[in-house]
Image (cartoon, rainbow, N blue to C red; front, side):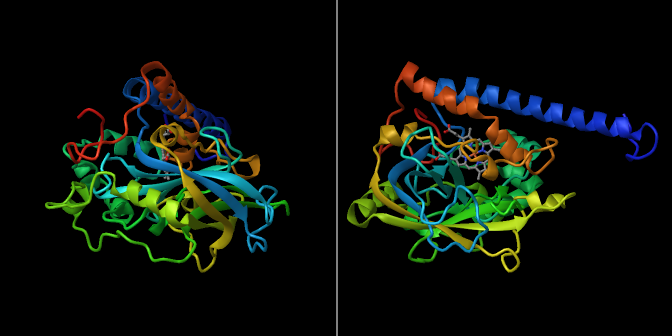
Length: 368
Ligand code: HEM
C-alpha cells in the first residue's frame, strides 16, 4: 500500500487509515506480547519478566520545601508520603555478576497500590528504544551460562553502548549508584503549561557512583559471569543493603528534568537513547527519600511497580506505532496482566524460595 502526503485529494483518508492501522498493530503487538509473557513466563515460572533478584525497603519521601521545578498539583512543596522502594539486579540471580541495577519507588507502603510509581535502571541511556526494538532485544537474548546478547549487540551497536553504560559489577552498595527512568513522561503544571519530564535518583550525600566498568570490550559486555576467583557471594549487595539500613538507614535525592512540549514535537525528544541537554534542561531537586527498614524476601518479592500508578498530569505519553519511541511506555502500561499473573502464581503454587548463598553461579532462573 502506498500513501501520498496529506493535503491533496485522497491523501487525508489514506493518512488517517495509516494512523489507525499503525495504532491497531501496536495494540495487537503489545497485547500479544503481554499475554505470552503472562502465560509462558510469569505464571508458570512465578517470575518477573526481569529484575527477579531484589530487596525492598520502606521509609518516607518528602517533596522539597522550595522547589525550583515547575509547579505541579501532585508534587506540592513539603508534601510527605510513606514510600516503598525495591533495588534489583537484572536479570541474573547473582549479585556478583555484571548486571544492570535498579531502583523502583512507590509513593505508598503497599506492595501494589500507590498514587505514584517510577522504575529506574542504572545508566543514563537504554538498551532499546521502541516496542519494535524491545521485541528484538527480547528475541535475541539467547542467554547461556551468564553470556547473552551477543547477536543483539553486534546488530544494534547503540544497544551495546546502552548496556556498557548501565552494567555495574562490584558496586559497593545499591545506595551508591545513579538510577534513571530513561523514558519521558507527561508533566502538566498548575500553570497549565504542558511539559515532559524525566526522573533520576542519586545518593543524598553525593557519594560518587561505584561499580562502573571502565572501557569494557564488546565481548566483556556479553559475558556477565562472575569473575574467576570471585570472593563476593550471590547475595552480597542485598546483605550490604540490609546491614546499611539497619545501621544508618539510606537517604536518596530524587531529581527531575522538565522541558516544554510543543505541537509537532521532534520525535527525538522521546528517544530514550538521547539525553536532554542538562545545560538547557537542568536537573532540579524533587524529593528526599529516607529509608529506615528493609523488607523480608516474601514482601520484597510481592512488591511490584507500574507506570499506570501515576496521576494524569504525570502519566504516560501516547504512542502511535511500534516504532514510536513512546511505545516503550505504552508496552509497560499494557503489561499489567504479566504482573497480575506473577502475583496469582504465588497464590496457586506458593512463593519462590530466597536465592541461596551457595549454589550454581551465573544463573537467571530458579532450579537451574
Ligand atoms: C527503558 C524502559 C524501561 C525501564 C527503565 C524499565 C525498568 C524496570 C524495572 C526497574 C523493573 C523492576 C521493578 C521491580 O523492582 O519490581 C522492571 C520490571 C518489569 N518491566 Fe520494565 N522497564 C522498561 C521497559 C519495559 C518494557 C518495554 C516492558 C514491556 C512489557 C517492561 C515490562 C516489565 C515487566 C513486566 C516487569 C516486571 C513487573 C513485575 O512482575 O512486577 N519494561 N522494569
